[in-house]
Length: 453
Image (cartoon, rainbow, N blue to C red; front, side, top):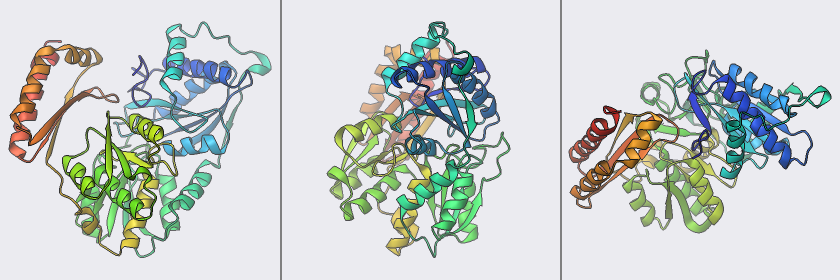
């Protein structure tokens, strides 16, 4: 990770960590780098955003920065992150920028950039942009006269993206009764067109964004209300997206959660049956459940683990030619169709599988039993994250706790790349033992790093 770019773009509290001034510098730095790669001509940049109230403010600053260096900007309005990744290729733009903090609360926002290929910028390009920011962009000549960038609005993005998803899913969902939670975010307009068009009978929740309610008690990070609505309404299943719709979780007709591991397992088996599982391999992260790993092995499907972050999953997939990968949190990448995680594409493929199986979703959900997991998030500033990494006493304590599990579980403690948190995850067969283990680790982090800061 760089100074400004984390594992998923630049993130922070809008107006504070992610200020208008920083957004303008990001725009100038990005335009300068992209102008170089465009051979001196004016680069064309697409901008999409989620429904946060700070989105307009940051888009204005980002647009000003881009245009001041001579880039042309095409505003897509509120639209999912994976839509921008798709449309940058379809419209032959030089880059696509998304203003979103994904699943985070509304006070946060973020800026992530896709290259003209539809993939996130490589580290070396992000480093070039960061160098311009550190130089306060004084090394970048500003445009004047007719060289100043032009701003336009594109109204065809959602239509083109829905058409693409409809063709990619290529399924008949007739007969399915589905409750769909759009997190009061960017997925609402797309989902309300797509899933009825595929034939499903849909009820939508989380489709009334007001700028402040994105992800609040709705979406993939708050499944309780969806699970209750599915049971009470007699739905076949429910699906939930996060604020920018790059992830999807689901629940069966009994209100039982279907996480990213389960979705990857089900789709991998379906792809294997159809001879579409390249390399008979799925790529996941170190957060994937041990129950998932053991199940995939029994199915003759190899798994490769990466560090947490969908960019690392994608790197492995591209390097080795694999077709599916993702995270337990619901990022699922289907590389035959998309260049990034796409919640609505994932949901469509899962629902298609359900319709074709003639089974209940709970039967699909029961393919394997998860090992219990306990996750404790310790709030931490950047300085506290650094102190944690350098504390040898904590490292030794964690190693000792791993040994106490005697091969019946595992400990994973990591610094979040997208949130101000240190995550403590313990997994194993004995729920009480792993709960106590996780709490002991969280306590020592609090004592040595947080309270002493």
